[in-house]
Length: 117
Image (cartoon, rainbow, N blue to C red):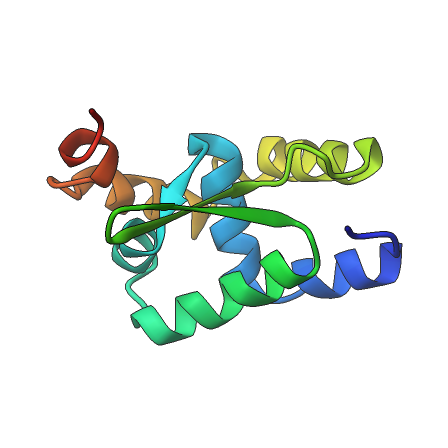
C-alpha cells in the first residue's frame, strides 16, 4: 500500500490519472470503458494509468465478467483520502472535470446498469 507522500503526489500530477481519480471520487466504482468514454481516450492509455494507480495501492480492481471495475482503495491513509476529497471539492465546478462527468453520464450502457444482478 501507498506509504510515501511524494509518490502519491507524483501520481496526482498526471492529468489523466487525476481525471480518473476525480471521476471515481465523485461516482465510486467505474470500469475502464466508462473512463475511456468520459475522457475520450484510448483503452490502452487509460488502462496503463489505472495500472500505475493500482500498483501504488491508490486503486483496487474487481473483475465482473468481462468488465474490470476500479475504485479508490478504502484502505488508503486518511490524509490521502482527505486530499482526494478536498481536490474534488475544489475542482468539481471547473473544466475538464465538469465535462468529464457530463460525458460519463451520456454513456447509455454503463456496466452497473447492464451487468448488475
